[in-house]
Image (cartoon, rainbow, N blue to C red):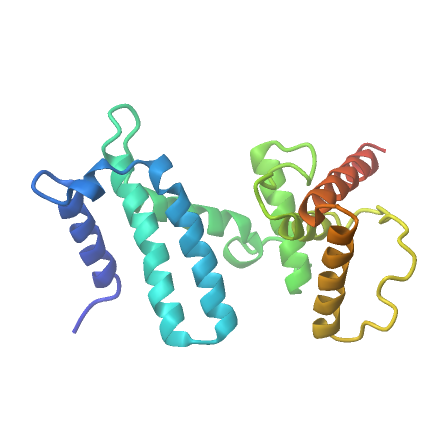
Length: 218
């Protein structure tokens, strides 16, 4: 019977052969930078599979995403100055999971009993580990504006930071579907006025980040 992890070992072996002399010329010439677009594409395709509810498609897309992890780890093995492999990647995330869940692995923080408290604690520990002065730090600028806005609001929920006054835009919006329709209408309204919805939201998120940092300092 196959042992847990055998499939991962096979993937590592295949990736090693593809990158080794006599393997695949295309795979051999790839770099972290040249693979970046594929990593992003596979991440979006995985999300699409989740949203479609197709479990077979999701399994395939997770495999494609896992390939990117194995590919990058194999490239990293070849670095002459600071080589590391997929085992180092796995051990790193194991250590992080244990460190970020003291209420599970260290018997610490018995007051952490809800998912919301766990998420808040996670962000606190992460900021402390990375020496970040603000919860706004570490959110990639390259994220789509909606996702960036959502992450920033989630991280700042414990702070008393007001949102801009936009009247009552959610009046009559009672379902997620109608909320999506509202977003679509807002994008259309912006286009009619020559405004870029993505750029406008990015600017709004930057203004909110300033308000958050002011609240943290004050």
